[in-house]
Length: 376
Ligand code: ADP
Image (cartoon, rainbow, N blue to C red; front, side, top):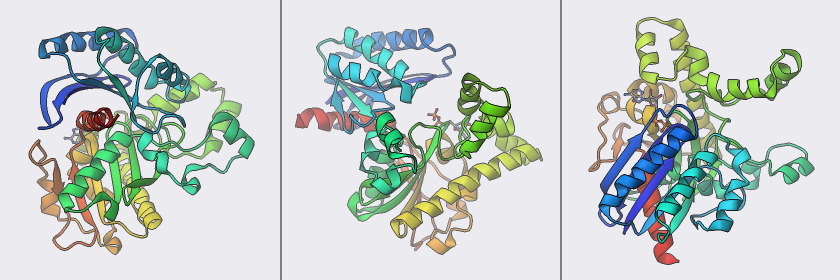
């Protein structure tokens, strides 16, 4: 099938027309660093859809939707009622769901006869057991407001699982995998025998690892202090949490290459930022190995996970007790492409294999859409 995958983030549009039988991209378009929300993004999507026309009508269009709430736990064909229900979840992912919905509307009017399928970033984590899913908050609040851990980056973590299984020549349901998606946003997932059993992002994409502009785990008392005693209102705290924290807060930029350059040149602030970042990843790897009673594989993906050998090395320090020993040379020589989307960096014979996987959300969305539409 020819599936067009449309992946609209808060500031970027990534898209690809994919032949799912050969996995080849017939057409691809990326627009990044979209500044002002709304108008820019809509214009970019309109242009991408116009360019798509030259390649004939796709069999289906896949849309990445970040938050599917409790209701959407699998790929879902979009109609007016589904669209309305997704709209109601926008408050849970205010940066991500609204632009994706705007793109869905444009694509539906450009391709009214084509099936449009929503692929949810939360769906892969629908299998979280109660003890990983629930926060220790009063039951009535949790129930009334749908407060629970949903988890994100599910499309990417599911793709990591499938790719690692192929690389290790095993079925996913035989493996315990710690998947680390380290991009601008970052999350870890514990994937036990084909199911997500824990993940570091929670009700919203703010929890867990240190990210480009988000702090990840925090003492919630800090928020109370900022709101009650330091003259910051809710909008200012929102800005701090979503835009000014994480690597940006620690090092003044979210560009990891720049932080690495400055750290190498002796900048203490950047050294500390990288140490905090890697330490947090290592804590989650250890925790998730404990959750699963061990790990058969630890996998890195995303812009940082795929490209930064020094961050991978730092994240993997002191994990020898798990049988995860890094081959320093293999780690420095990772090369990923269409033919080899997965590279091993553990020492030969390591009990826990360490892998680097190329993130490819568009391919994962297209494959899932092909299987959802052919089985419906
Ligand atoms: P997004 O989450 O927006 O899709 P990406 O997965 O593309 O983002 O990751 C973006 C991050 O990857 C940025 O912090 C960027 O600095 C980092 N990155 C990209 N290339 C490299 C590299 N060669 N070395 C280190 N970090 C890199």
